[in-house]
Length: 251
Image 1 (cartoon, helix red, strand yellow):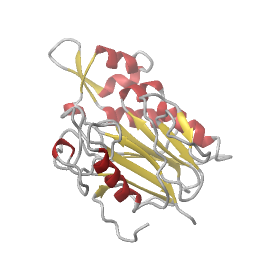
Image 2 (tube, rainbow, N blue to C red; image 1 turned 90 degrees about the horizontal axis):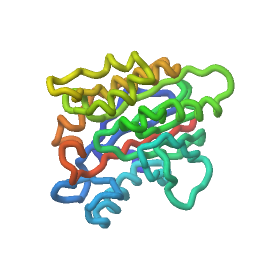
Image 3 (cartoon, rainbow, N blue to C red; image 1 turned 90 degrees about the vertical axis):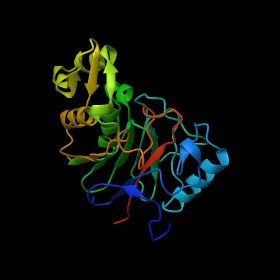
C-alpha cells in the first residue's frame, strides 16, 4: 500500500480505527463515456482499462478488495470467510484489520457503518430497492452480532444522486411510505401526477437513525449534478462506476 494517496477521492470526518473513501472519475485510463477511472466490471468499457483502473485502486489498499456481485437486494456477505468468486450481495462486513471492503455505485448510495471504536465494519450498496428492502438494517444487524454488549454506531453516507435530480414514480413512493409514514417527508410531489422527487440520502439517514445509529454524516455530494467529478447512470447510461472502499486499521 502506497504511503501517498494518488487517486482523487472524497471522504468524511476522521473515524477511530476506520479508513474509508469514495473514488471520483479521475485518475484512470478509460476513455470516452467511461473516462477515466471506471471501476465497474459489468460495463461495456474495455476490460483491460477496467483491470488497470482496479490495479491502481488496489495499490492504495492494504489488501485485495472484496468485490461483490451487486443485485439491488439486502444480502450481507461475511468478508472474513473466504470466497472463490464475488458473492451475490449488496453489503459486506468484517472484523479483521486490513480487510478491504468495496462496493461500486453510479447514483446509488455507498454507506459505511462501524462502531465508534472501529471493531466491526460494514459497507452497503443502497439504491432505492435495497434501501426499501432493508439492506442497511441487515448490515447493522450483522455487525451487532459481532460486537457483544452495547456499542455506539456511526455511518457515512457517500456520494449519490440528490433529491433535485432523482425523479421517481408512485411505486418508489409506496415502497417507503406504505411501511413507514415518516418516510413521506423525504418526497416532494411534482406537478405531473404520480411523479416525485426522492431524497435518497435523507431516507438513508432516516432509516439508520431509526435502527439505532447515533452518528450519521451525509457527504452532501450529488453524483448526477457533478459530471466532472462523478459518474451517474441516471445522467448517462453508458456510465462508469465509482468505488467506495473501507477497512479497519490496527490499533
